[in-house]
Length: 117
Image 1 (spheres, rainbow, N blue to C red):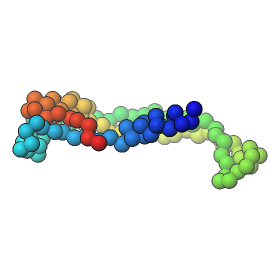
Image 2: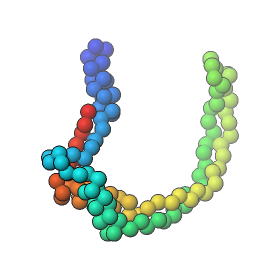
Image 3: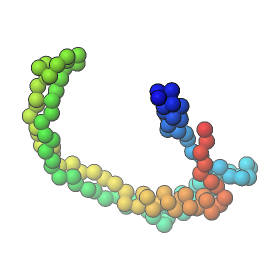
């Protein structure tokens, strides 16, 4: 049974290492030029729209804490829970739309986003 799982696990691990690149059928095309023009087009259509989102305070319940090398539960202790402070995060509301338009622009110019091993 273990010998059957080894190749499957190896494939899953290698699949996580794959990378992707933009490629064009005409090798002489300049990616930098097309990419720059598509970025400019996307920023013009969807300029950065920075917004803030506040996360409310939340309670983190008690957890068991054990020192390194603890051999049994008797070596551990239960800590008390605690409340977190509200946290404010910033995000760009147009980031996804801008990225989608950038990708569509490159595809319209003949580029393909392909897996490169």
